[in-house]
Image (cartoon, rainbow over all chains, first blue to last red; front, side, top):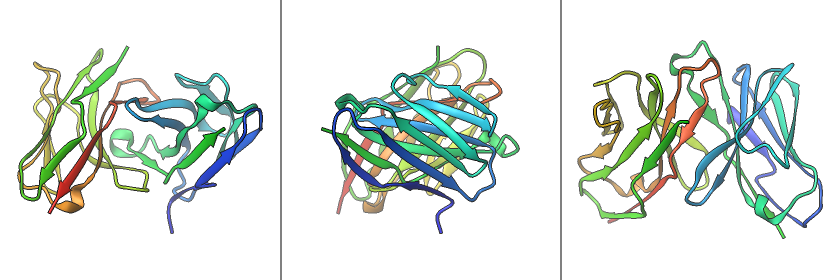
Length: 114
Length: 113
């Protein structure tokens, strides 16, 4: 079984709809991250969380919100989706006790906003 | 701020060819450097890493050397295989406590038989 899972894997929605992307992990890591990937731009950090009570904005947080429901769960919401939020979204986890604070990624959610 | 620049792709090679994907970075302090690989339909996986100048990271036949004087971390492989077809990302992690990763734009590699 995958250590970091994301649901849904694919989603098509319309402008103005509220969307939630979910991430779950069984690695026992405290730190979780949400990134978006756009062609030619690499991955950009949206939000990150060090533990259930610690949530921080990344470089492109506008239009997004997150919820850390438990150590193992970190959800990303788009309150009112717009077409330029069409992208591939990745969740990642890490643990500061690991060498190099390596991050482990989920398989991604492909979101299309029409 | 930190930044990572990768050579523009896509890169198309024949099997057993030599691969180089260039990566240069801008950062304050002494970052750690990484190469991640993304196979079709999957998330990113750490391929190799280096934490200080002159360190060489290696894995699965890939190598990269941390060159502080040229601020580079070029990825190389002597003989690529079809199974190496993927997207490769260079990334750096600065010394802050949360270790934010800064990624390059990614390079698509396609290897033909």
